[in-house]
Image (cartoon, rainbow, N blue to C red; front, side):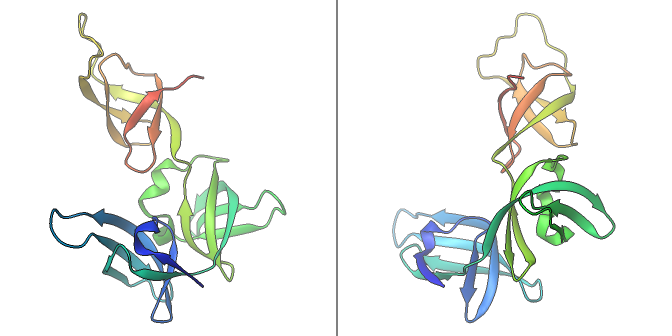
Length: 189
C-alpha cells in the first residue's frame, strides 16, 4: 500500500479503507468558494459489491492498493461475462457485468483496454480515452448552416446518442470521448 493525496485519485483506482478494498466508480473534486476543497467519491467494495459514497479533504492521505495493471484485448461477450485476452501470454479472463458497467457500449472487437486485477479477479476496466464510431442517425445538413458552434443530436452505431456539429452526416466516422460520449472530431481514416 502507498499513501496518496485524495485529489490525485482517479476513476478505476483501488483504495484501502479500513482494511477493505474499494474500486472508485465516480469521483469529483469540489472547490467551494469558502472552506476546504473536498474529493467526493462513489466506490464499490470489491469483496461484496456494496456501493458507498465517501468524502475526503483533498489534502488527506488515502491508501492506494497495489493491483496488477495490464493491457488486455476484448474478445467477446456471452452469458458468463466479458472475455478478455492477455496479448503477452494468451491467458483469458472473464469480467463480470458490474465491473464493465456502462462502459460496455464502447467495447469493440480486439480493443485494447487496461484491466486492474487483484489475485486474478478483475476489479476495474479502463477504456482508451477515444473511440471511433459511425453516425447511423442524424438530421440532414441544411444548406447555409455553418459549423460555427451549432450542434445537432446524432445516434452512433453503438446506440449512444451524442451532439455533433451540423456538417456531420449519416455514415460519417467520428471520434468520441469514452468518458462522457462527447464528440471530439471527425475520424481521419
